Image (tube, rainbow, N blue to C red; front, top):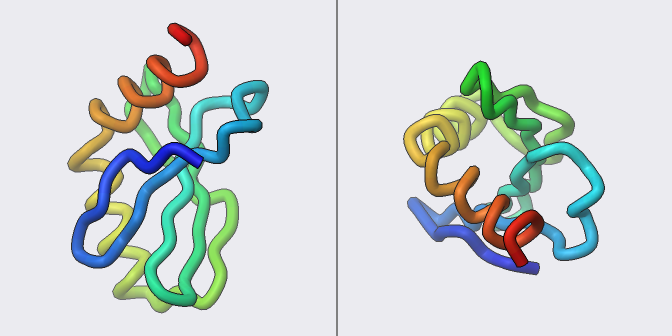
Length: 83
């Protein structure tokens, strides 16, 4: 389960067995869990699921993912594509 970064209590990570899925990132903070699909070409994210997340927490994690999109994409490609 490679962790990409910790920020403001959020842990952004991948599951190591998900390399056959499209680019995405998981995040958790306390009892909150979520997953976002990432479109590298359009530089957009779409929520796949969330659990126990308030609207404010959703805004925060979306901002974190968007602000660190290049780091997330590079980490995905390094782990799943350029092993």
